[in-house]
Image 1 (tube, one colour):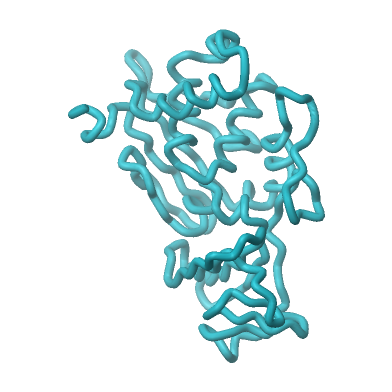
Image 2: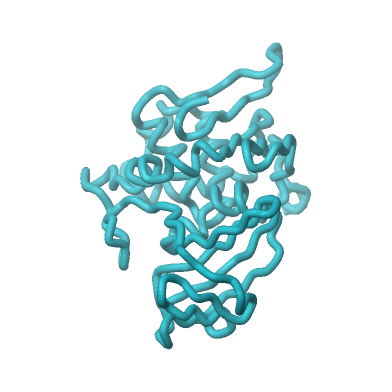
Length: 245
């Protein structure tokens, strides 16, 4: 299915057609869409590519014009799309983010604020003890205050989430102008805390794969074999609210 997920397009005369986006530019758009914090933009990007293809991209002379076209496409008619997110992709996130964070206008990588790995984001496991959870964690000598978003007394967290078997169990957000979050992943009897850059924490991939959060009316869970694979359906019809406008 490719390193960056595949969109299976159902249309007239076919059952399922895999669009793996073999061209480099197509792969960039798929990678970028997985990193988007707003699922509206992710859906718009995939619908735009499914209905217009890569040739229509040339009609937009700058990133602002293209971004507006992609965002507004979430309410367009399209074939039904199926977005695949997998455990393997979580392991590939460094490569996915390196591609998705490439500035196609400047021809250089985007350096993310507060990120020592530049354009790449990862799920970084933390060595934590959970005896004080959900009030705090002890991670390799650092005290993490989960009630106030502090690490050793400093306001360093934008939030944290605890998922259990692919569903969000607890979630907290903080009004800190910082760049990192903690995600506690519990699968069966195993529990691990990860340190994430804000971009990855807020990304569509993270919300759909780990947290099971669907934030757009067009998205529904089509197939669930978490933690191995999840397939989400993107309804090709515009959302009901869009039909009324």
